[in-house]
Image (cartoon, rainbow, N blue to C red; front, side, top):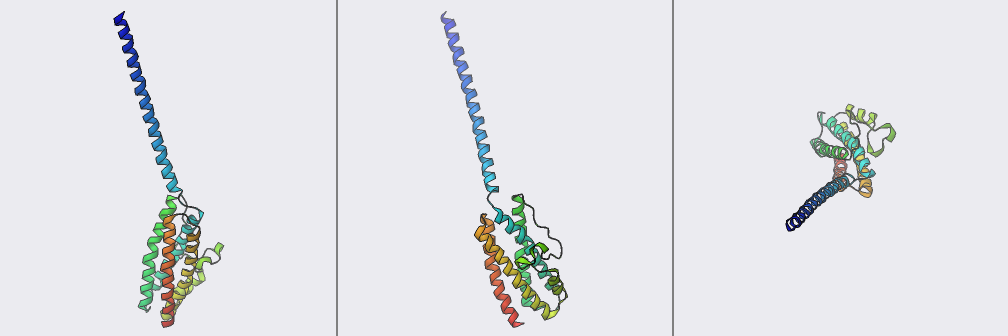
Length: 206
């Protein structure tokens, strides 16, 4: 009888141990699930760290920058351009090409389409030349101009182009929520306003 009692007690203890172990496993699984959920939530929060203003800023600034790069390439290919103008054109190209890549990567992260960038980017008809974008006629005029006339036309067009970019950037600063996009917008305002001042001075000297 005593041995039987001991055996029953041992069985109860063993069952309790098994139950506890199962409970621990379940808790660990549950904890693991919570951890994964938390990680997923963090990832979703990071992806959601943008709003419509950020998306519009990147989508519109990409073709805008692309046209500035194209305008600069046009004037750089011409002979007899004042070296101060070609220096500025190289500066604009070097600054804006990497910014295009940065904005494209943001749109990919946000699962948003990027505006198409074909050769000879011109103002989309739906915008009617808004944001300082050059029309097909403007681009053709720059392509056909030579020497000092080309340099002056490039500066005149790029001033208007920069003013449009600054307006777009200011809207992003006011309405955007993505910290990196806002920082880029602030950099665009500072850099391009300084370049406008330089271009206005060059225009008076050519």
